[in-house]
Image (cartoon, rainbow, N blue to C red; front, top):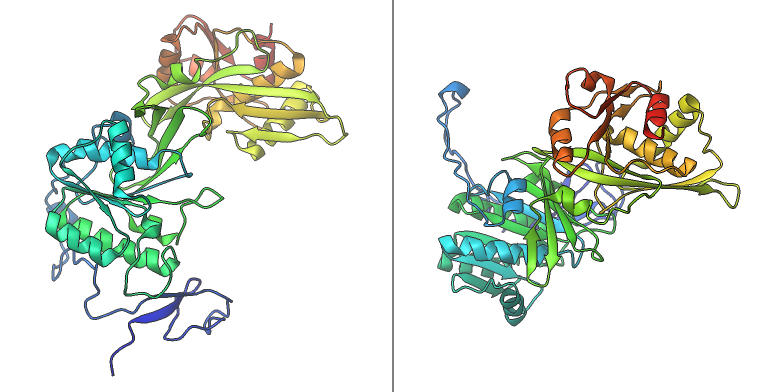
Amino acid sequence: MAAPRTRYVCQSCGAATPKWAGRCTQCAEWNTLEEEAAPQSAPKGAVAISAGAAPQAITSITGHDTRRISTGIGELDRVLGDGVVPGAVILVGGDPGIGKSTLMLQASHNLAARGPVLYVSGEEAPHQVRMRAERLDAATDHLLVLAETQLEAIERHIENTAPTALVVDSIQTTWTERLDSVPGSVGQIREVSARLIGIAKKRGIPAFLVGHVTKDGAIAGPRVLEHMVDTVLYFEGDRGHAYRVLRAVKNRFGNTNEIGVFEMGGEGLAGVANPSAFFLSERPQGATGSVVTAAVTGTRPILLEVQALVSPAPYGSARRTALGVDAARLGLLLAVMEKRAGLQVAAEDVYVNVVGGFKLDEPGADLAILLAVAGSFRDAPLPEDTLVLGEVGLAGEVRAVQQIEARIKEAEGLGFTRFLIPARNAERLSRPGVVPISSVREAIEQAFQ
């Protein structure tokens, strides 16, 4: 009797059963069984990295050739770690219409200079891809477009064309005949991804998998998908603005702190060489509640504007709204400001926003957020040539930040001449315009004197 082609695996405990059931017999969780291909003696898509190899001392292992291939897009190369590694599998996620397909088409055009690139489109017809390629000036004979969603057919075309790079747009639309579940289900995504990863590793070609995102912003499908690939990139931004930010949340071949900044135009995405000037280009003059800080992302600092608006709560219950900063962090800073500096904002609505949609997730921006709120509360503008840096502690102290010289140097290049920085950092600097700050109260006094 032939072994069953599929089985049902609990997504909670991993127990498998040949038949579907509403409740797992092992962990007793409901509705956790998902269909997937039953294991075989030699699973399709599985890759033996070093079959039959014996364990060896790590010092005796010779270095592998990890030459990087440039995508021709400087900001994308920066996020990937100075290019893509052969055999690497990159998962690209982002909101609908944010520019994922545009970015992949531009990168495919550049990679096609090395040889044929197979662009698998599961959501658009070939003539739609051609229209976008003409608009982006990305049409070339070496860019092969395949409108297909069945994995077995895609595998045959990969075998016939022998591409130097592969793009699948999107992974949620691709399905295999080995499973009866609908495309986009947990089992389909896991099986399809595993086989595509096997092809990329076996052939040593870079593969880009475009993924949909859920309403929460996470890539749709099983979480294990992000563990299977080498790199996970998120393409972020507001479709109402021209900027886009590409960030890596996982990268086996590079730094996850790097970001790429793009501007969306009529001819596609263009890298922004100076993100600091880009984010500060529309900064209002003499506005209260506006403070500039510097965040370090990977190897470069970026100047960002933090804006705050403080107004009386009309209904007696004060609101706290944070965009681009952690809401819990904002609550902490407001409590420190009330307790240590005497500014009573408990009865005020407080709104904080990082201009440009950038997300500040480092404590070095604490003092800038606090001074933006204080400036709006006092209705006092901060001098336009002032940069603010510092982490704020619960005792009201201002703590040192890392890479202070790089941040100040970036600000000096844009005309900033006054720097409110932690006293510990100021001890090691001999620059003009440096104002050492030890406490929150002192920071407010120095900022609005």
